[in-house]
Length: 182
Image (cartoon, rainbow, N blue to C red):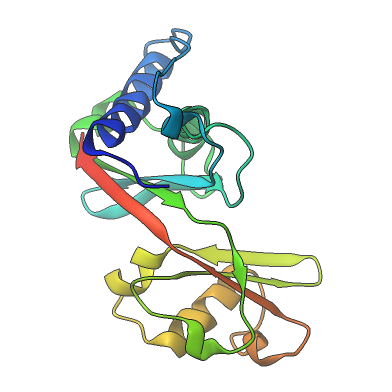
């Protein structure tokens, strides 16, 4: 999926209007789009940062709904339902940056040499545990491949070296990442 700038602007607008409606106690306007691309099902995440620090991040790993609907739903989730943070307050808006990550499908890998830091995100699964880190996280923290794998394991609630276990499934994906200051 390749998004045009206008389609990215539509998605950013959906995030902003959805969060604003919720803060105003109004029902979301029920967005529609003519874009066939935005109607395609795709995994996506909405990330909110306040003063450059994570404030909320939630998404779907795999395609479940049309992209524009996923973004609307994840905007609410990231702003008000991320269990790591209290619900967003109106006075935080001017300090927010929003980021949207539109994901490619997951690809299971057999060798970690397939991971390219800055290009790929990682999804790790073992038993009933799983964890995901978006591609931009490794760049932000200046991680190498091994640290990226270890941190993804920790996010899954596994030991840092769990990625070495033959029962651990490692998948990669890419993302079209874009955002705006509020």
